[in-house]
Length: 338
Image (tube, rainbow, N blue to C red; front, side, top):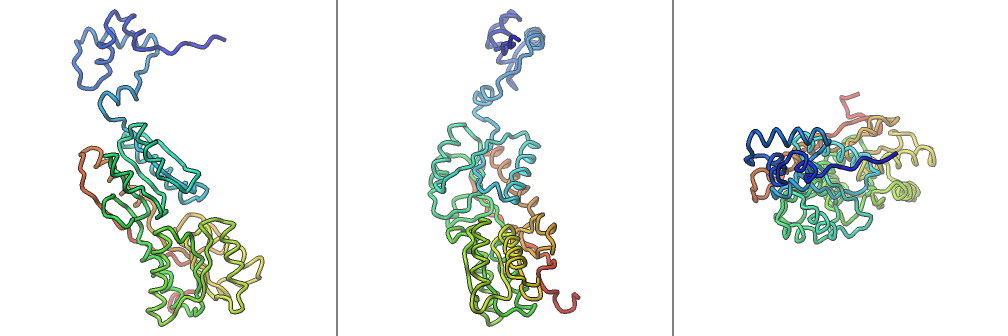
């Protein structure tokens, strides 16, 4: 079967009996073309099933309508959900998405790659601290929004959950429900969100005249979380509560505690996660978790990006989204809530 050739603007111009520039003007918003010429071009385009090249047209306007997103860890359902929500919001605003998912810890090279596609803005959900991303991003001249992280610079826009407040809320809950050996199953030490969650936890413990019992890194990975949980629960004096740096790792710790160590949850061990993800409410028992509202974070991020693109406003904004603690069955009920 012969494949039908894709029509080009030259084919439309030939059939309509007009110049190629007339075809281009017909499909360019705001460009002048006579009603007669427009009618000829549109009729020829319909006959040839011609669709104008959106990228070529956008480049002529010096705007592609594309937003570049640098993401990572899409195996994490929270990150996958975030990406899906961002895509829907961008499309609703007439913007397209160009996604890059690096397979390396060096994310700096991806800014120049995104720029080669003439993106109008960049969103990054990458949380590593050891990056020259701020410098690379500033040199592009396009708006950049850091989502889920605030770097040690005020030069970049950011929308982040209150990680410190989340860690503090988790620690406060565990202290107030009678726990005295509280451990932290951390993520990666080079991420701002992990550090802020740990700092909040330690400050909550200090407010109750307690110190962190133990800490093991899970590196935000399932296998890492399992290994960390085993180490914590094998200590000569194991913890009676664990705060995990995200829900994924908390669910793994829950599984290890029940199936490998035979612990009763929450009577012998309490577990708190971070993210307030859907899996936290689906698990049995339900996972107590703290985190920002995902839809609000995405909406604020996309709204900021759209405003920066439309206005060319170069001012820098920092938004901190409050967190909410949802108590489920992996923690003891507070007194008065039984």
